[in-house]
Length: 478
Image (tube, rainbow, N blue to C red; front, side, top):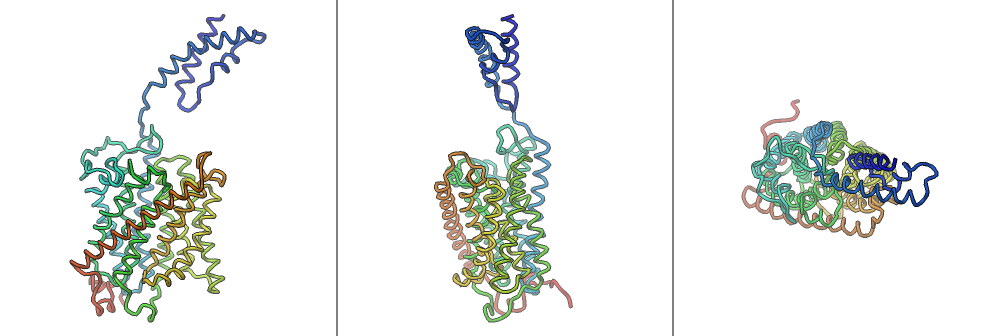
């Protein structure tokens, strides 16, 4: 009977050690469960000891088996959709959002800049961007090992947040390409209506190469400085929004103010387009944020829910505050509030709880409203479409609050020993590095562009409108 019990215990140990998700039961629990009623303490202890001796080698053998990397079809399907949604954010979402905000004579110029910048950066991502951002280890940059996607095949795999779960590397490359491309496209709103098309293209190449790639690697790449420091940026608060917002502000200063700025009416020509564009951004942002989970798991569901809640809260917050301060809530304010909420929740969406997301959204609506009004006047820059006021300010707010609401005591997913003060300090360092790096690179890049092709069109061309001057077309025919 004793031998039979030992054989049964050993078999149970094999089954438990081989299970993928269950934790192995202790020999004491197994022996107590198997021991007949009335067995003496001494007999039970002996059984435990012998069971442990039998089970230990089996458990060690199971632990020695290497983890087998697998590609889950559900993860692949979700990430294909998420990548498509980010493309949808830029073209047509961002293009229409920006296009509606400018005057009718500059509608096509903004659509064209967003479309072509997005396309240009996508190609450069394949040529060298992906390799430098994710192709190797380093504090600031990766390597040149995967230039022109060298060595990447249909069999190549990319990591996710789960060691045994992988993605086709081609899919990861595509997803990250959309992030790089839309970040550069965001910047054009800051100096819309007066910059040369060629200047936008050259600047985009320089800034992408010397700013976006290093920041992306430092935050997300293997061995990256900010990643190693423990900075939390789930979907791009620093990499995308602060980065683009600061570059846009520098551009607004260096390109100069639009002719008649502050004296002539420069109202958006189609708030209907802006509303449609903002709605597309909201829809596409689910791919941006939830897709950053890289797997179709509860982590993606959390990011999805937080994106929904924070955006709704920011829309309400902006609308309420604007209604109180200005007497009437505006459609432009509602759309801007939605974008502000999307921006602020981006770094936090994977680590805060739903209530934390709502608080972040409420804060973003009010703070970004100040960013496009009070702060904008203080800075004195003609940031045409409030790139810094929404993306820069919202990104900074979201990055800092990520360090607060990730705390498990506030509903976040942080570890039990999570320190709000320590994490906020790390977040602040990431924000500061991004601001300084982006500002310096943008300043140098704009100066180089100005030296070779000039930044802005002539005064008479600006008055005529960039649609005709730069592209020989008009958005509307009367």
